[in-house]
Length: 333
Image 1 (spheres, helix red, strand yellow):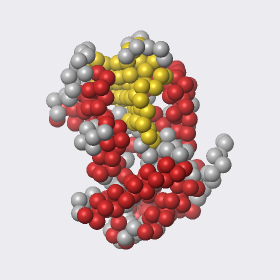
Image 2 (spheres, rainbow, N blue to C red; image 1 turned 30 degrees about the horizontal axis):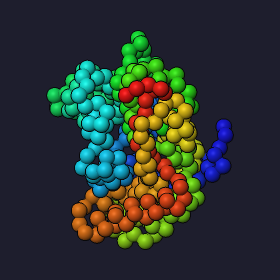
Image 3 (spheres, rainbow, N blue to C red; image 1 turned 180 degrees about the vertical axis):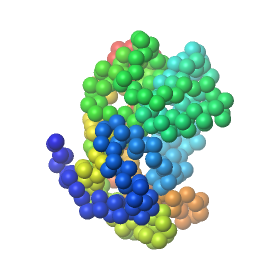
Image 4 (cartoon, rainbow, N blue to C red; image 1 turned 180 degrees about the horizontal axis):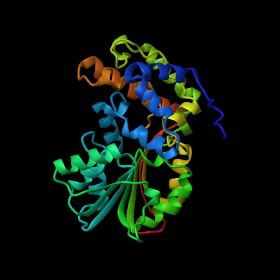
């Protein structure tokens, strides 16, 4: 086992996290983490039990910021942007979404014209069950499979759009994975679309971003630092230890630091845009529910956080997330 030079086996933050996991979710939840021994069981368990209550992506203003960075319009999602720019006017399109979760992005694409086949794949039974329910409720014809994508046999079938939304960074050896499993299923004139975390492996946050996140956290008013119990305050951002990462989800960011270089090595870049996440991701984890109101103070604070994150990225040239569209090398779109 080789540790990142910034990461330890255990950190003080792991004990803080353990305390609040026990406090908010109880002993049964903790026991479920220690009773799963195989890699597959730990990964599926993580996402079967996962609920996004207070992560930064639940905040509408954060989503609008991503939309603006991608499409130039805070009200245009990347699905609409990609379809209009690359797929509009085409028919009989085939899409596969790998690590689809509850299927939000496939449904967004399915609302556009031209798709004859849309497939979503995920290892979480609960996520796939919910994805099927959502597709049925919206009268959308989408195939969902609770399977390991690597073990699927497509019998030489190829797709016009291969999608990764916060899932590619869960694969080990991303370079080899793209070469061996994604290039073969992408059609010659198809596109690969990614919306992805590309920061430090295993979330071993850099000292620079930890310092900046903690500086901003210290300046937040107490009501914006309240955890889900409504009483406790988030007082510090910590770098997680490796044991905690492997216990919770061994698939979390094993090779994320190589994600961008691997994409560029295997594909031609049609566009690649920096999304940041360096500060907002770790700063807002566990306290994002405090930023769902649309009052003036909340909007002012979110604007300030995003501005400070952008300034940090410019000053350090660091970036932890990208949106990208890619094609096979030397192909014509």
